[in-house]
Image (spheres, helix red, strand yellow):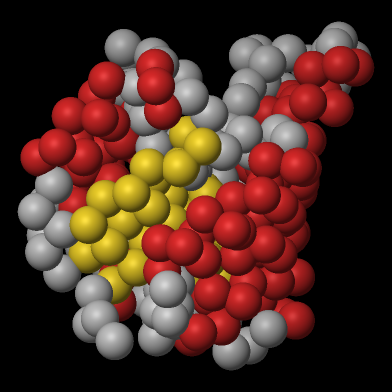
Length: 236
């Protein structure tokens, strides 16, 4: 059986997801399953796969589609064989931008909940048998500071904020139901990505430097909690 740490990362074709799989796969000690909606249209992910020193496997996954989520388990089983999954990192998310509580698109609200909450929930269910076989058994759900009521960001980005607050509660419930797993949420910070925009505070490389300084060693003391990119606890 391989001693490699096995990771499954969504939204792996862009932004911090791409940076994470690129960084992880640079190590021979990693097995990375990189999931995105359209691998054929992901040249940067393809380049990362060619440059990988560890194992980097690319799978097709639409986190807004239940059938796609259920089907990815077969792909993971073929890749892992008798190995378990150590880390599930749910990066995928969408945003309706700066909408308001008294002025949002019902269709956008529903789709945000589908992708940002239901998608990670169903994916964790689909991959649970592999996590149970893993040595680390870690679920990392990527949230946002906008999901925190305590941080008081006001009325902006209502739909996105609501969906991420729901993701926080999902993660808490996962941790409470399964104390044998380590499930927590992280705010990666305001990152220079397509979603974050050019005025964001940190680059994808800086973000992943911070996250990889503590996530690989996360233990039960982290479970059911909300952290910033430095691993510091944030208010709900």
